[in-house]
Length: 183
Image (cartoon, rainbow, N blue to C red; front, side, top):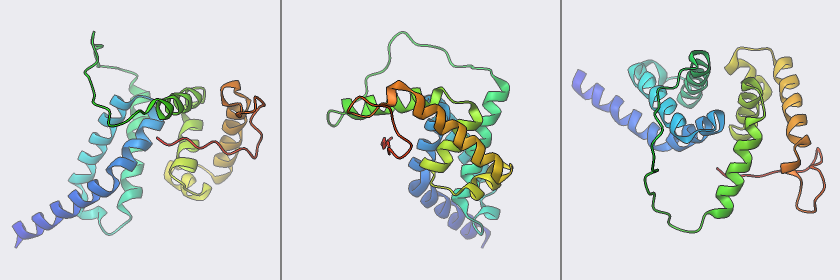
């Protein structure tokens, strides 16, 4: 009986990772600005989630694991230790089609997010990528909704002021301009 229950939990966890893994990885990439660190954060978050999966399945598992990802990102900033070693040559990665425009947009997004503070970046990513409400962000980060609003306002003001995000006609981005970058 116990073996069957464990197998069922493993199947549920595998299905969760298959369904939410890319979303969690994109979230971590936007938070860190570094795809390799993002993979490490998501892997660590999934390890923690797996250990407690029997308690998580009744709640919203995506929100639970998303919170772990955000906390893992915070922990990295607190430690400020980077054990990664640079390599002389980056391994080749096959491309299925020409992704130059998408890569340029991603680089622009990462650069723009890099100008924000850690909290501003987290709030912007959760709001516009995670599509969470201000109340949900406040609950997830353990801060007041007013703090979320003011942080989001401050961050968006910074992003709108960046010349790199000027619209195609050469003018500055207006408050109503929507910048869509697919990651």
